[in-house]
Length: 394
Image (cartoon, rainbow, N blue to C red; front, side, top):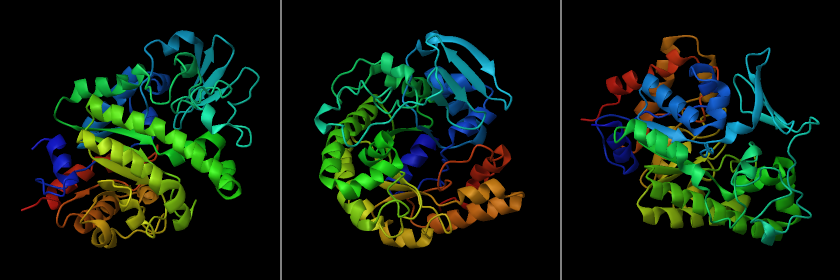
């Protein structure tokens, strides 16, 4: 059975030969463990695709999550020079005087020539009906806020028109793995876009001070999310992940989830699922009180399910609650994995999840959230052999 078939069966609530294994890796983990310059992983589709496939093969994961949109082929043409930093990272000096710091274990940070960072939107002045061209927001086009240079290479236009270069990483990865590995795409939830557009504090305050305007913005941002999710499905990914990281109990209540998240993510799933591609949601933190609400979005599966004390989800209980409707991926304690020092500790953590998630199928072994940059590779190399040993179905 191929890895692609294994994950497909798990997502369909059928029993493959064994429990599949697929962890999401932090970008810093690729920086530290793939022999590719950091700027090539961050700024090029070729470099990121190579890193994705390289570590999937090293860890024998059954799937790959492509969690960055593709990059234009010529994005690095505007770089004047690249310097090494004292901490082992990189500093890219752009021809216009801007610079980007790429730490050795974290996402890149962009600065203007004067040292300022790209500005975010102002909630009070932004018109929901004028989101098609955010010319006054450096780089906030299609979730490229973190790479301002891409704004200059993307023609401003309708929010429903996906830039062609976005598909480049998907194409490279699929060409490399063929039909052997499950390839998943990622799209931001409208609520995540709202948080990124204004910054977390201002966006959360706006939910209370002007909910009507938040709904108007979410309505417009859903157009973008739907377009990118559907486009990835049609390009050939095997599943679409809705990244809704800020919708857990640490950010918003059940009532706010029902009002500001559920209807817009439901629109996404209603648009994507007719393509025949499964849709699942990634939400961090405390979601034990909203599993039923999350199921109402129409998704096929749930990702993360942080266990205590990171979150409040017990895997066996989640299976009883929504396991008949949703496949489940995750629940390994991501922070504890960083701290573990022995093989036995890692095996105990993963084994507990396999035993709780395996019955009846519909479970994919994974860390609850992203694998931290400095998690040692030997720990991840234990997971698939363990699934082969104790995760087999009769």
